[in-house]
Length: 134
Image (cartoon, rainbow, N blue to C red; front, side, top):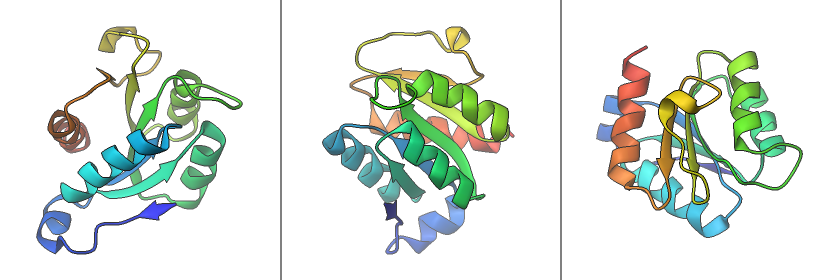
């Protein structure tokens, strides 16, 4: 489940941000993971909220979570975002959906929303903004 960029040391040293991508659609997950890795992020990936919680328990270096809203399992992406905010408050959160369209200020947590299909470079630049803002 761990996907780490190995061939891009310059970007990794410039960036060094570890991200958790939570997406139940394997092709969409693979696409955003590959895009983020090419931007220099270290990426962990999960297909549902339960797997995401397990990864968060094991990896204290995760600075940001990118999660889909509509996922099967014990909780959807919004409930996962609330759980992460409550248990790991420093983690920045980006929520995405192809079925819902939310404004950032309507999210149940402080974070950002991207509707699908999203622009990969905008997602990456927003991630960097969020983690550097503190």
